[in-house]
Picture 1: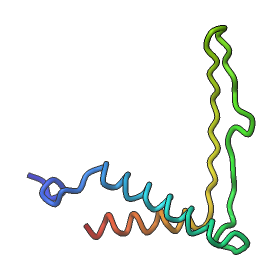
Picture 2: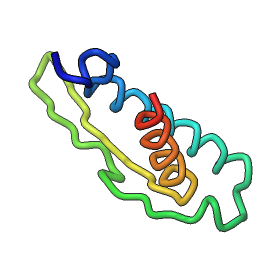
Picture 3: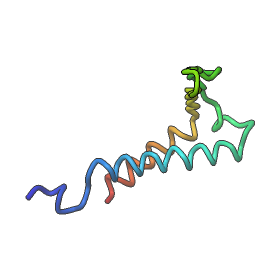
Length: 84
């Protein structure tokens, strides 16, 4: 067996820790709205894309905001993953 399977590390654990880092970083950034930690860029679809099929209307929209706090959260998530 390889060392990673014995230790229980896998891709899902890394993904969940990075996702938790993004969420916590975004939360911390929202607590300090006018500081450098909340500086970032927002990109995506600003207006939702509508698909009208007659009896069914589907709207698509995705906006991503990357801030300094979320980047710090990603780095901390990777560090925690490596320490596991």
